[in-house]
Amino acid sequence: MKFPRKTRKKVRIEIIPMIDTMFFLLVFFMVATLSMTTQKGLQVNLPHASTAREDVHQTVTLTLTKEGRLYCNKEEVASVAEAISRLRRLWENNIPPSVIINADRSVEHGLVIELMDAVRQAGVTKIAVAVRPRNMSAITRIKTKVVINAIEVMHAASGKT
Image (cartoon, rainbow, N blue to C red; front, top):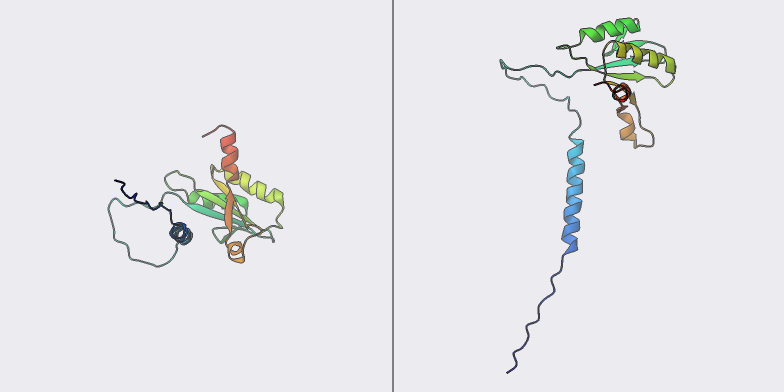
């Protein structure tokens, strides 16, 4: 006696739901990265704690304008020496802050190097130069990005820690 064979359905991987899922994940991660930007938003009254300590890492911004004015954290200073003395006063627990140099594109290259050298001689090893990226969307161009940590790279290349 011959038994009828059962035909088996071929197993298929449905690709459309997988594409939907991948699209959802893409959108999710795009939105998640937008929320990773620095938020300087709402003021809240934080509770006190006896073991609390302030953030050890500080960032100081030194700005050179096209007129030749120098600013340390938006406060005008008379000279590079005065900027360095203010920078040293901002040190916490003998840990030097990171320095971001904002120089107008028309400022002479030598002035920027002089400022970087003075900051380096003051003991700061983390120095970055702020730039505006090219060929980006208008929203991205508005935000200034810190793209290079020149002194730290030179410091690492010299073999020092």
